[in-house]
Amino acid sequence: MSPLSRAGAACLLVGPLAGIASVLIERSVSLQAADLAAAYTAHPAATHLGLAVNAVASVLTAAGLIWFAWSTYPRLPRLAVAGGVLGVLGMFSVMVDDAVHLAGSLVTGGMTTAQATPLLDRLTSGGVMAAGILSELADLGVILLALAALRIGVPRWGSAALCIGTIAQGAGFASGSRYLAVAGFAVAFVGFATVVRTAFDRVPAVSLPLDVQRV
Image (cartoon, rainbow, N blue to C red):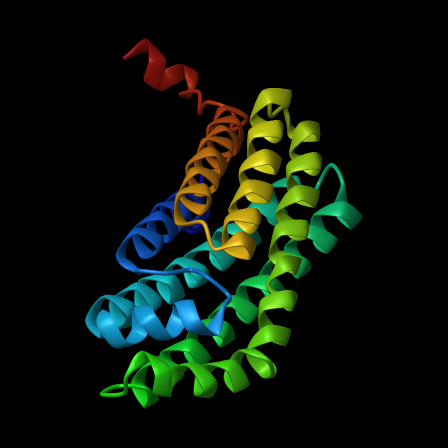
């Protein structure tokens, strides 16, 4: 594989691992303003670091999904394009969501939980909520790519792991469960690793010319 392909595959693997790190660093992934206010006011440094790591994870995952779509394109072009576009758009929405939450955590610095809650409530009921909903496009994109991956030889259990992990990850964020989100990232990582291994195994070995073999 070319260096660019190897870089894309690496992004696909490192992205979920960075996602796990971000969830473990943050003190809350809840959508409730009161829970966010408590986490932001009590653990501002962890919040800032966790959101920054999550932004990096989103960029890496977006790059990895582009490589994923490119790898499946020859067999199922329409499904690959649809999955890649939805995945990248969803990751962009996640980055927007992170940026707004980071701004909210900075604005509430020095406030009490009671003071920060109404401010964050207004924030999460507007654009952040829309960005959070749009981020679900990434999950749909990954599921479409997981189905396309079956055509390049990825085993069914690998595709299933990718779908299940993606759904569990989304459910973890929707319910505010950090551990469910981490489990989802971990299972999805197994699926991504299967995709990468299959893609690399499909690359034909380079045979040496006959005159070189004789030497």
